[in-house]
Length: 370
Image (tube, rainbow, N blue to C red; front, side, top):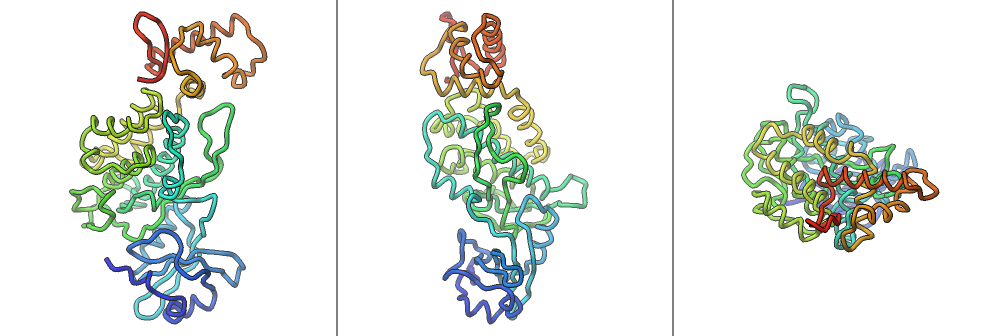
């Protein structure tokens, strides 16, 4: 599909949208952001309010997109004003997302992937969690009159997140806590559930789709999640089988067999959503809560400490001694006692029972990697 908006010069935009030109001064020599097939984005100055904004310009009708953005406000960019110009051209002014905001595609390009980076997996779980929250608003409840849309173009370039990780002594999760950290953008081809929809980005779109289904957004999110984890985009054949997803994840393992399996199961559930109507953003969100975010932070901190600092397995008593200084801040401990060592040995036993730790047969040595 030709993107005529991307070819417009500043002078042409001012001529086609005179009402907008009277208030907004376009900045730069070209559109900003990543190229889209359905419009162009310019940085601009709102001369009335003296603030920088982003302007989306398109030859398509933008009314439905604006209404949807306002319906799910908080999970997408804020819309400030709308302009209708000559010859079918339309534009709207919206919130400008600049550093520390970035698209996931930019993050993937810049991230330095390394082996056994368990913290990266925890970050990815947080990011996909926020994306699922946004999709629950877009999709709406099954019988609700609010929402009931399919985004139809979920991919890294359409997910902006607030890249401001902050180390915490009592949690492995480090993304901003008190404000939305992810915005779903480019709702230009969003479609009511059940309508015909052939638009989208082939590399992320469910290849057999005909009508717009919420599961297709989850399928695309599954591909996005695997690309975020590994730095490489899987092809559609990977999404067809859990074993293929496992092989793909193994290229950039977290270093923990337990956490790898959580990621594999999440990606597989997203893939299955394309054909199973009972798998929804809300149901996947609930499972992610119970399997990741409602788990005791002590377990995740322990797993990270072992993964980061140990190259070989240790016996239970040895592992307890190793963990004592690692977890002292979490517990508020200042010295070693026999009782605290016993408490940590109990922690190791609990994590082994839950399959978070592995053990080397008769040697009784515990470790995290498969």
